[in-house]
Amino acid sequence: MIWSAPDFSYEMAAFAQGALFVAGVDEVGRGPLAGPVTAAAVRLNPDAIPPGLNDSKKLTGPRRAILATALWACADVSVAHASVEEIDDLNILRASHLAMRRAVAGLKQAPDHLLIDGNQLPRDLPCGAQTVVAGDALSLSIAAASIVAKVVRDQIMVILAQQHPGYGWETNAGYGTAAHLDALLNLGVTPHHRRSFAPVHKMLYQDKSVSA
View 1 (tube, one colour):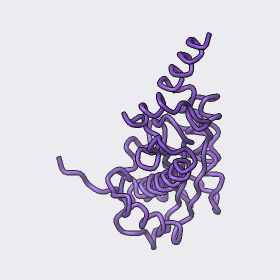
View 2 (cartoon, one colour; view 1 turned 90 degrees about the vertical axis):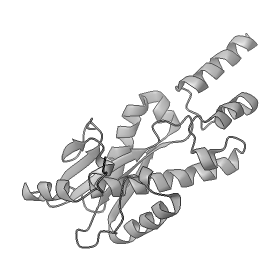
View 3 (cartoon, rainbow, N blue to C red; view 1 turned 90 degrees about the horizontal axis):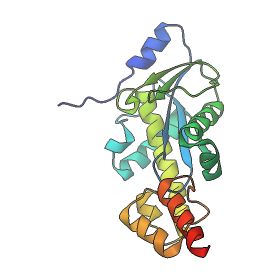
């Protein structure tokens, strides 16, 4: 199978329907056991799109960093988060959508159409929107959002790793790798772990059962 790069066709279709300001929205960090979920909204300038935009998962870390820097310089970019507490309180899907709404609200120019990665629209969006399944591989605006969100969240996890060494967050970004799970057993649960996620919840429950 030949994989094609994302293009500007979804954005152009929105412009053809009368939209003036189109932004792509994506999130990163639904799966990890620790750290916030991070969303980005990006409104590209059609005349200054950095070459090489793609699904962040298909890019190397250094390439993502270069593209993120370029996007901050030439596009309208906003990043927002939902905290571990919000994830545990709302559930990860609703927290992801909360982060998306916050990212959209942070754009300098309010958009009138959104391209949302995935198959579910967040509630209470400020304008018209459409979902795009695998949007980070199809839409340049969503790809840009995926890159920015990934770079920012990875930076957050590096900082948290310095505060809580031993879990490997600087390399696993909070995902439940074998090393991370071993560290949970040996070092315990930190304030940055998602208590509603099964491995963390199970460990806390077992600790309470043992102590009881």
